[in-house]
Image 1 (cartoon, one colour):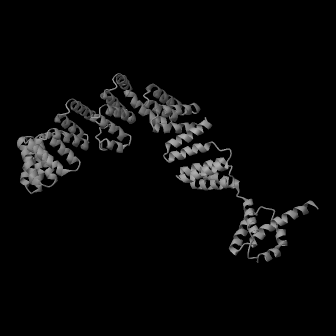
Image 2 (cartoon, helix red, strand yellow; image 1 turned 90 degrees about the horizontal axis):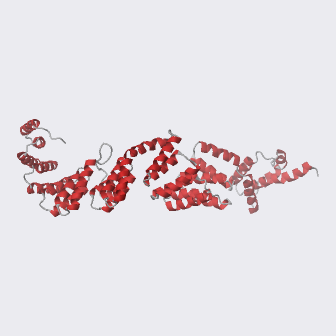
Image 3 (cartoon, one colour; image 1 turned 30 degrees about the vertical axis):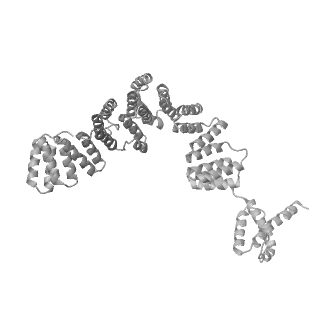
Length: 518
């Protein structure tokens, strides 16, 4: 048989099969769908030749009347459509365009279609899993990793790296560390994964482990960002020389690098205090049980904008002397600087802690707290040191702690006017005016010769619109010691009840007296 006749013998039955499939469908919509699909997939095929279609047209018209299809024909339809398959080169071209446009939904959909058609394409599996994770679809990412592992052999090593990323996204640091450790064991040149392991170690404050991971990463790729990360870890280890060696090297590699430009000023700020810190390092080594040494060093870390170091020293001082309020305040300040306000609140330190122009608790406030702490430690049964500390706490807006100290003082001496006065201030600042008035009334009764207590009582009475009582309190204060503040407050109340002439006299007199500094 001539060669072209043999080809015709093969081609014609194959061309006949799809048309049988079309007409054997159970209903017209299905026939239309199959016909359209076969036509689309056969556009460039030599199977359905025009001459053949013309030749067998009567046969097809007869077959079109068939109303049922056998399972064999339906299976043949599926096999034919699957054999045609998707256009992988076109899909990959579309995927590349989607990646260039950063169109994540399109990347995910196209990647899924590619791996369905080519299950051995590990690169696209990786793209699919990564993009699913980036989009926050953790369950789909997990399913993709399982399918990838089941279909591709040998098992791709990078699966463990992505499993670690997925575990981290699920806040399972231990599993993340496990998977990343497996990956770097199989791929010792995975510098990026070494850096991820370092970050996990930093999270749990395993600073030496973090340094070790970063050292391995830097051995593969010495970048300014990697050097700065290791320098920060060296600071946590109090290895000042190595820290500054790394930051200097990072600056030498690329002074214009964004990470260098951000980190260098912070390192330069801390450098101003390094000499003092090193002196305290030696003193702490000789006298580790002295809390003030730890607090002095913590203060330098705070001034150097290193709250994590300040926190560790402050917490150590708290452990050495749990009654020291200065340690509590410094620890609370560090926690607030780290954005851990809930933990600061657990110490009783509120978010409105007073700061100076540089953003730190004023040094004089810490010294006042330290002096009061020392007196309390020496005389724990005396009310005066607690009153002193309550005032110092009130001046830095820590009213809950101030009230607690005032209450201790009142318990030690129920007739202490100063303790009631401090309690009144704290209660008022906490929004409890009724309790504040009760305490200031006690203060004026216990020490009726104190003009400040009468003045403050007048302020509280005015707050609750009891202007007659407020005027009487300011009058008592002025009788003891004339002041422009008391005159002005009395004038305000007099105006509120229509005593304009008296208010004018008080205002005129207040202008003749010096105004006390705030």
